[in-house]
Image (cartoon, rainbow, N blue to C red; front, side, top):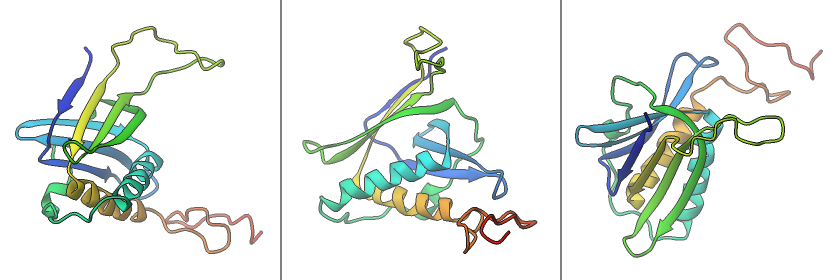
Length: 169
């Protein structure tokens, strides 16, 4: 069954992580009333979405309101509808909203050709306000930064039990 959601506006668009640093799973979530969709993603994808939204917001007037912090938490249960693949982002000047399009990952062969010919992969289209985009960026940056600390010598993450630093050996 194909997952397809189209939100013209949402109560919340957020990112969160489940698990301990070093073994966390990241999720994007869009909610409107009782309708909710959760998408599993990589930390780098969440960070890249935040970086792009920051660049878009830099060219626009500052948001006038801020979503409440509770809206930025993942709503339970956290069950992914699909794993994130391609991401599309844009700005619609006519309604002053940021567009976020999220598509399901497609497995590819050695030549980069899709293994599955099914065009009905999961798709989520979300319009968010500038305020929601700004709140997403702040929240995503704090979630990403809450991971394992970086080694001052090699910049690799340090596990709770330490790590072997290639620059110190």
